[in-house]
Length: 164
Image 1 (cartoon, rainbow, N blue to C red):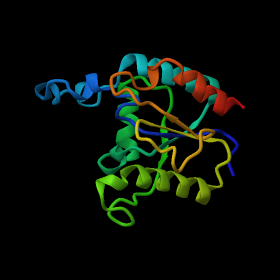
Image 2 (cartoon, one colour):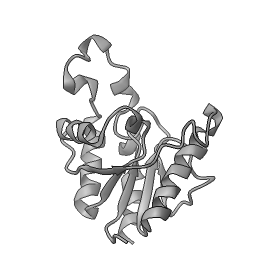
Image 3 (tube, one colour):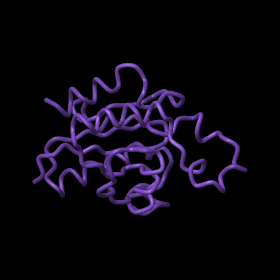
Image 4 (tube, rainbow, N blue to C red):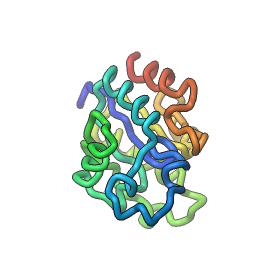
């Protein structure tokens, strides 16, 4: 059992807003442009990291395409002051097969990790609505694709969960 708080992190619409992933693909040969996060979202996330010293668990679909090593390079490129320590298991195509089940799948992957690792203090940050499966004491949604984690009130809600 680890007492440090865990953050189960989605990437798209949390750190990379719609402004980043709708950029011109001809610039994608440049490593930074391919993996660019919103600078204001990074600033907010770094403030959360500084105050909570969390263990970052990648719950995003990015885990299907990028290793922990690549994700840590992406974090470094974007000046995030933490590393990805682990990823959630992939239940897509195993237990869940329909796009309508995407939110259920993501929540199940997170809850499986929490159970297996006996994680006590944790939060899932995602743009998907995981609230039917994960209670408000462990989940913060970033519903605005163009704002992500920098949306007003999100940082305070995350900190109130992780610091209490």
